[in-house]
Image (cartoon, rainbow, N blue to C red; front, side, top):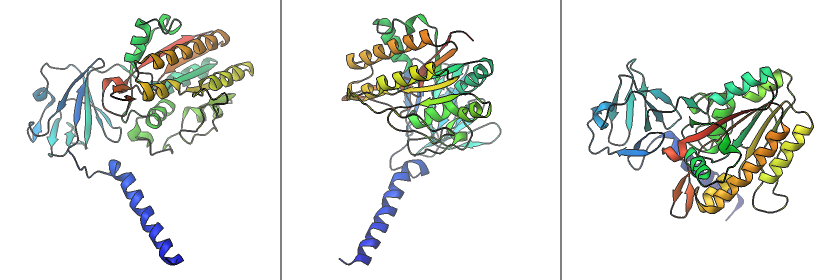
Length: 343
């Protein structure tokens, strides 16, 4: 095979792989797209596209009326359901608002959603930054049901004494999208990060606010950067080869505190790693939660400002461990904790 033929082959292969990689996010479903209905405590039902009418309302598919409901679309759209109606194409469901706006490809509906969203973290960080020191601790993959289980079983002796509110995550419940929502205060539809595929934000992040206000700022990550932000993250390799970067992230946070850093954003990845391997309610995952609980207690004892703690997404149990990325309450509902240490 001559050199010209080889080049043409790899060009065609690259184009094919690129088109395959984008198919999930550009439409054209091979299978009908499920629409799940959840609350903040349970998965209620999946809408069967073969049994619902061509047009229907929320009341038509619920057993009991709902005072409040939100829908989410596959690109991270979030809309209140207020008097509009749904259209069933046989492959997916769209929503038509009272203002005749169309939201295509609905992935789920949450009934009586929490009043708090992870997008509020941006505004809470900004408010606390104006008062003094603030730290945000991102516990990757830590769902609210997992928090409740850990509290019940005695794995979080420090966090169990803090008030934990329920917060609604974003679709798709994966790290890129959740992190993007937390640091921008915008939904994936607005900030442009709606899956694992995107790294570029369309909007400014909390790091720009911090830098513009002259705050001494440190963004402390695991072993890889997730999104491109206005500040370079401090990466932490698994130096002791224990399978987690949490201890290295913890050490970096303590160092930043000693250096009198006024805004710290720290990202612990270990809970999500254990969730994937063993399941979110497994003994291994609980031990990882317990370890991070001890880290947070030590951090809180050394910090003289506000600490905000939340997660990018949760996780659900599977046959071989755990996973996330679906419209399920386990993946979308996370704890939200604020600890004031001196501001």
